[in-house]
Length: 240
Image: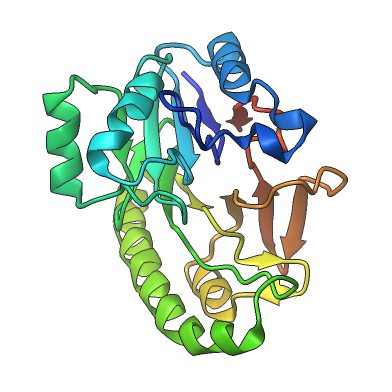
């Protein structure tokens, strides 16, 4: 039984109106690539973390075909919210939707933590500002409010993870959709929270097109690994 991770599936399995294929050759036929690669490495007893940007759907109802597509793949799936997951609703509503539609292998991670195999899984959406494409005035206006909210959610998840880890002694691994640090951006509040909780390993998605970058880097003593689907060529990565 193994633990895998892949972010940014960007599914539109019904209408194909929001296909990512317009963003370059690597995205050509990406939904079929995900299916083929997933079934090649993931078994029924394995678990896959999907840290956000799961479906292009705008409503919970419209997300059902994409979620059923994920549900049909091998293994258990732990999903997290990304910036494009507008369909995401409350945990109770999602769980009811899963039950009503026979979706049995998907579980949300939201303000919570889970013990999976040899690890404790925690995380939140996080926050990231690409200063090259967003004007600083609008960024500064929203930054504090959004970051404070994300830090609260991260702390809820890490507090739950600490309780699980206290009983098992297992390593806490943190997953984000947004990178807490990338290029000249640092979300200081999130980074300080990770340091406070003695986190040593994190995974993130969201970044696309940077194929010449290394997949792993360190900020102080914390290791960060990028697992955006296109960056890892749509192959779920094993965590070990």
